[in-house]
Amino acid sequence: MIRISEIFGPTIQGEGVLIGLPTVFVRSGGCDYRCSWCDSLHAVDSAFRDTWTPMTAEAILSRIEELSGGRPLTVSLSGGNPAIQPFGPLIAAGQDKGYRFALETQGSISQPWFVRLDTLVLSPKPPSSGQVTDWDAFARCLLPGPETVMKIVIFDDADYDFARDAAARFPQLPLYLQPGNPVVDETAAVDQNSLVDRMLWLIDKTVADGWFNPRILPQLHVILWGNKRGV
Ligand code: SF4
Image (cartoon, rainbow, N blue to C red; front, side, top):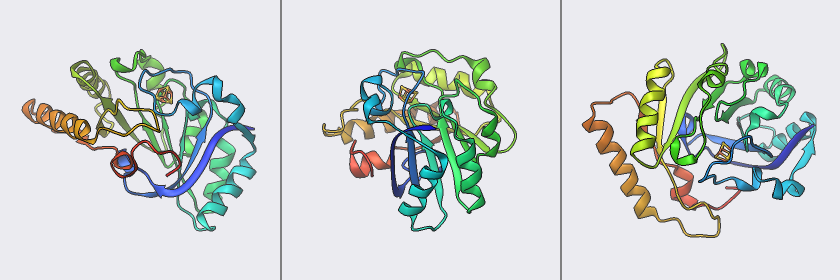
């Protein structure tokens, strides 16, 4: 059984390498991290455990097919940390029907079924999260098979330095930088101006440093829908 927080879509992927791509999101419940700015606490905090539903791979795939009208598309596995759930059978069954699977994780736990993924987004958490990255565990997530990229949220100079260090450790991984959103309450209005300011700061900083490898992207869904869930 897989612990599911929510399944919704199709909508667009709002960030990173698949930005703009229509997708169904499958969000699992539970995470081994507690980031200070986590925007998915409903899928992290055990206080929400009652809202998580144990589902079989067959039941999840059936819901994905229902939402997509049976037309294969990319399925985004997220959380929480989806790496702590047994997603292998879902990926295999979905791919047999033409669906593609992307998974985003902080890279703290590797799973053998990562090799079946089409896209693996590793998102190590910078100092502003309050978490500490185990780089050996992160390296164990690098398996042959999926297109693997790295995405890092940036709030401040320390986060930027962390991203530079991560890029030096894993130069083979395409890197996406994303200005952080400090407003995580889904009922609160997002300060779009401060997001734009942080994005401009980040662009200026990378350009001034002559650091031309990363792509710098906003969270498109936050621009369009704020922190609203399920879109
Ligand atoms: Fe939230 Fe992701 Fe951090 Fe887990 S790793 S606490 S889901 S931001």
